[in-house]
Length: 222
Image (cartoon, rainbow, N blue to C red):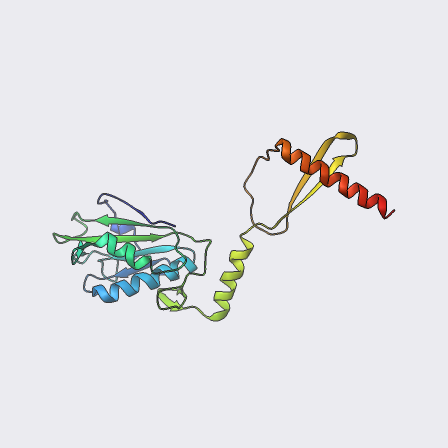
């Protein structure tokens, strides 16, 4: 799934952040090297997507307050493109957004040419997600940890349960030979969105042939 990024710097109230990291929020200070930051972004993407989503804030201290921000460029590459590149190393991809805060306020001070970046990872139906180091991660309180084997297996199983398992039954309506009834049953716990079934003339012919065949088979074995 393609990332969704905001084209313009945003305003953000940093007082809405918790005073410390938790299972839904991770902070990285401006002194973190780009090499280490790239690894942290990838593992956070894996962990948050495998744990129901969360927020990663780059350029803040351990209490969630801006500490000058991180540079807008990484060499000749924009920081936003660089973040997209790091997140792209996680497979399979899922939804996330990037917000940029550049303006200093009474609450925070951000250096010129720097910004605070907020990466919001949405809840994913494609878990488990593997980081570039070929490992799976989850959130455990305020920490990103390597997922145990049974957790990865459970995430795989949950993905299967999200895909509807459908079966159908076709018959003529007992009270009216000119009406064909079609029943669709789900054998999984996945929610199925409302839908409308359109039957073309060729579909009607196939349904008629199916009913005649089943009737012939039933008559043969009576």
